[in-house]
Image (tube, rainbow, N blue to C red):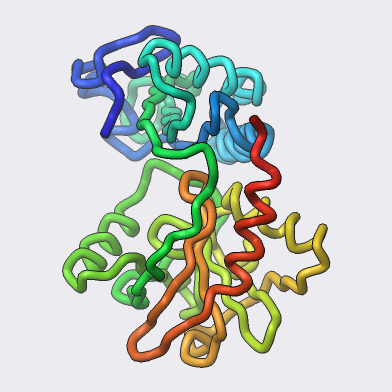
Length: 282
């Protein structure tokens, strides 16, 4: 459930107050991007990684002011909104950044505006899901591979369509394919596959979002000598894999139990989740 207040361009507003004009470019053209972040016990997790990706995305979209949206900005603004909403310190934040100029497709300005929202979470740790996810592959619309594919842009129709497919088929998560028919990501996360005791994840060149938790898991695997390869992955591997798990900054690691009649283990996901919680800053 959304908290009562949001932060819009350094000002607090009631979450249900109308603040976006009809001329807003994110509304009209999907001209923006966003970050989903997690706070544990009042400390924003992996703030530097979020700031790096946000700045890289703003640069890619030719937005001005990306140097100002650093990890200090993220920590400061999330702390302000936490205090305003009187939250206990375990929170999911969503920061939407949009190009604030008017105009048609050609913007009259490349300055930006932002909206920061907060949603309280239960605990201070990343908890591995008790019940494994049931998944399927959504193949009606492929994700294109281009210079914007690695960023979380406001153009999210592909994910909306995948979510409708997920809802219709009563699934917990849906995997997306790229334009070449290879595994890309899931509807809300990056995807990892364990096959013959080797961990695989789609390379960034496959068009997946450069997830912050994906980055963290890559580092964890490296630190603990777990064999992990970034690769081009055929969806056929899902029929043979020992494990499948998905990752994002809000939920951490979630393991998959079933794909069709196939059932998976969760040993690697458990190990990585334990290592992840050792990184949580309190």
